[in-house]
Image (cartoon, rainbow, N blue to C red; front, side, top):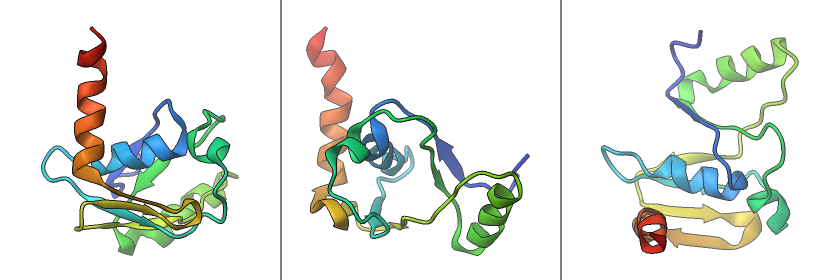
Length: 114
C-alpha cells in the first residue's frame, strides 16, 4: 500500500518506548533527535494512548506521507529525525540517552524476569 514507506511500528508502552524501539535497527543501532514535542508530560511519552504510531520515512518521502494521511483524515506530524549517532534525544522531555544502553536494558528485561 505504501511501497516507499521505510519502517512503521506500533508498540505497547507509549511514544517513548516506540521511539526507543525504532532506534533498535537490527542492522545498525540508530539514534533520533526528537524536537517536535512540546511537553515533558510522562503520560504522553509513556502512556498507552490510542492510535499513536511511529513511522520512519526517508526525508524525500515525508511530504508524500503527510499527504497520504491528510487525504485519509488521519493526523500526522513530524516530531524529529533519525540520526547516525546512537543517542535518543527528546528535547521537550530533557531525555538524552545512549541507544546502545537502552537496547541492552530492553533486551535483558524479560530474560531477567524468567
